Length: 305
Image 1 (tube, rainbow, N blue to C red):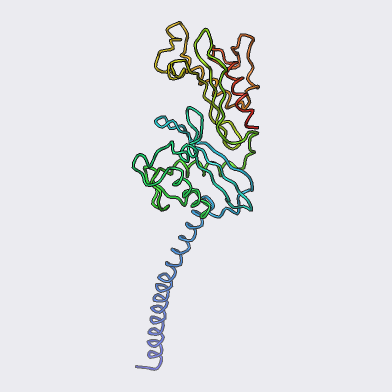
Image 2 (cartoon, rainbow, N blue to C red):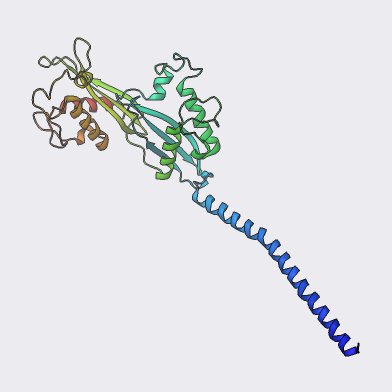
């Protein structure tokens, strides 16, 4: 074989080797690059999830009071609420309680006075004691989402807590999302006023109970008692008051509840205009005399200022 042919053969072998080496390097580069792409995608997903999730660090929160209410539980008659205090961008205080459909003391106060009765029902601790553990857990972790719950509203992350906590986590999250609010003009608590005597015509002594949380009226109960000790609103609910039977469009307790809700919206009994006969045109569907009840609410709230 001549030198020229030998040179051609050597060049061909070198060329094939170079191409094979390039192919091997390309395959190796793709293999090495793939994990890098996966890591980048994962990092991007983590970043997106972090941006979408509520901030666990409360440093972004504005200082002030946060307040929100949940829906009324029709079975228990309790409507949950949460009050949070933020200082220096952090949650420094948390209050979880509920107002009653009958107004009066809030759930935590009722529990503290032994009227909620979890221990009497076989529980190891009272409701307010468990609520305090949940409140402290939020202060320690600064994020309602840290208190994970199952589909029934229970949690395993707070030791010693067996009550439903989803009322707290959901309402606390709603309060934080809404932003700080101004406290109302009243002192928190339960307030009551009643007429001096039984009405000689109706036989009822009118009563007004008002519950205040975060300085706001959160629950109102207009009712009355007779000499037999019966409750006027309960009497109406049981069909014993008989307004519909007398031709009215609604029962007494239904109109009373509309008046109560209107007062909660107005936050001031004096803001509800009434006529000389004690009725009002301000509340649609209300024909009963409400002036005396609003006056009682005003008397009750005099102790809250």
